[in-house]
Amino acid sequence: MPDLADLFPGYESHWIDTDAGRIFVRTGGKGPPLLLLHGHPQTNVMWHRVAPALAEKYSLILPDLPGYGWSAAPKAKPDHSPYDKRSMANAIIAVMEQLGHVRWKLAGHDRGGRVGYRMALDHPGRIEKLAVLDIVPTYNMWKDLDDNLAMKIWHWTFLAQPYPLPEKMVGGAPIDYWNLKSSKQSGTKDISCFDPRALAHYHTFFNDPTRIHALCEDYRAGQTRDLEFDSADRDAGNKITIPLFALWGDKGIPSEKTPLDVWRQWATNVSGHSLSCGHYLAEEKPEETQAALLKFFA
Image (cartoon, rainbow, N blue to C red; front, side, top):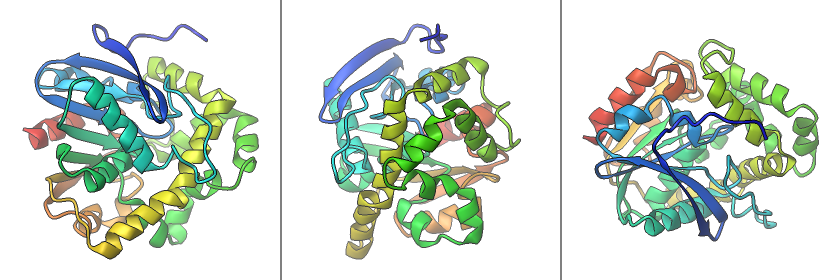
């Protein structure tokens, strides 16, 4: 493994056992707890540009989701657990409890946002406020799929294919795949938005067949169990009642889907706006992202 830069100087590191394996977590800052959940295909490092400002007001908790970064990548069960977002949310709750937290604010980007809104639906007493970055619910992504969205989220249908097709294809050139996939979703259509030190973290974890398989299982769970859970909540009329803030890039993934209108189908107290960028808000527009989060969480 190459030497990787410490982008969170002074933070503590923890490895915490959960039903989804051992989870790696960074903690730092001061104030009430703010849980930050990263997306695909990244790690907790994605928050490094916004963490200093957030840490002035909040005690930050930055885990790697199961299968990502330095967290364990347990073997998936036939139903794709523990890579469904309900299982991931339960693992993160176990992490928070072992760190001494009962209730918290949460910001989640991409897959982390999906873990966040699933947590809000399943455990409504745990979260005070929820911010979701550049997503709409999994149900809407699959059910509203059209020709434009299908081309934009081609990796959803690709990574969800049965084992071992995507594993073999991604595993043949994992770093090339990471760069090409991520460049298509950035506002500049390249990877210039990423700090080279952060990029080294992303490349290192992604260059591991075990983790490539885990990430495919994440998307297989998205097409099966996550969709089932969303459908059940939708059919039952369950809604998120805490304040929900949607922040998205005007060149990001859900930009054509009027995210606020979509989120108002799922939550009763919705606000938000777009930023002029692609999918990777916290790295493309860190100052605007941290300002929006600080305003909402205050």
